[in-house]
Length: 150
Figure (spheres, one colour):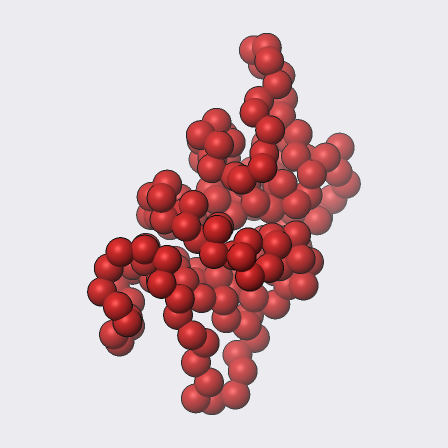
């Protein structure tokens, strides 16, 4: 089990960013904070992965709705646990309205992964996105696996 301070240390995200994601229930299926002031929340590695992913998307500039749509799109394709453990993918969110998974290691030339619409905005995406948030899911999972879980 991982506490928020450990997740912050391993990912480089701030405790404040992680707490925001947890306090505002941005991670689907996560239980609310335990009652009582000053009690630490603990997360499984999968829960920590989802929490860190949400916080990273928020740091990248995505609003709460775009984060929720992105997570829903991911869960429809592959549960976060399997996605993290399979590794080798980078999540890309363009202009807050399109999402795709790309391999972390480049594939052959000319191969482009398909964008999927998750929100408002021009469709289909034309050219390079103005705003692009990329998260290396395999690296995020690896960082959370470092050290011992307390």
